[in-house]
Length: 472
Image (cartoon, rainbow, N blue to C red):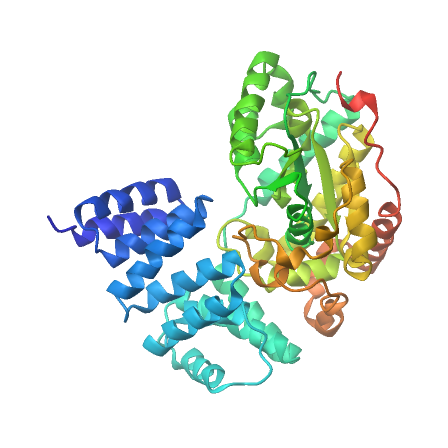
């Protein structure tokens, strides 16, 4: 029996909608009937990878697909994406280049190549992509990939006017949905809870490895901190997950005020189930499991109620550098605020405010880490991180670029480089195009005050032995 095209197409449609488990199930079922179907092999591989399954198995499936369909550009650029996730940047670039040899109009492959290579000249490939850009023949999705790719190329080449031109168009093309009104309501609810002092608190810790949540704005350095922790043998890293978002939705309907009404036994059961998932695959001597989802900054009340033994690492970065990095990043899904400067500025302020609320509420141990300090003095800050977790020092933490965990976020290329300060102060050369972001942030007065506070707070050690944080 031959697999129908519609079956495999359905799997890819589910994949595009972010329904990775369903896409995987359909693709694997298709392979039972047609084991040589390259499209099904590729879909199964990338869907499994998105769910954090064994990347070695996913690579084997896609490599088999390249042998079955050597002239299929999409198969090659998906293979390259998995190589990049594993840290094999040479393999990634080779895959993207092969895809472009097959199809010179594969803008997804060009985007992938641009993200995983630093350009030093305007190559014939770039010139071809400029011609393609001006052709008027691309659909919106293909043009979005192309513009994000060209923005990265011209940023590499030190041409800010051309880089921001493509960046602004790419953001306009992307335009992901984001419900800012809902986020304003959530923050208002958190403010009210803080004013009344009615946050729900966890009572008893659950035995076993404790959770760490690395939070902050996207592009603030959360992936770098995760890579540092990944090098420690006592820490098991999970990458970005939807776990806390799903728990929050299930328990409270995304209303922080609803948490107090959830019975303690239900909270306990939810926490135990979540920790079982988080600890799956961790080594027996693991002491911490780390979730690196920046948006969990808005869920610390839920985290504290479920996991009283949790610790929070809060990444902070210059608001304009952080904002600019968001604008240049093509997030695959979510982060809808990052494509519009007014929303982006408001989100940076919301994140700063909500973290101040949590610190004043004293719900959990929180360590502030400045991105600028981290890249300027990596050893001192890495030691500060490890000390916060009460772990013995390990020199491996000084080489986060050697971490072998799989990275499925937009920081795949950066996290494989040695720690450097190339992006510090980058906003200065783009300042004339960032007026909407500056205005949304509250102008230079707020920006300067926030940046000064980041550096002040970063020098204060967190009190992680306060017993009031353990039970209530």
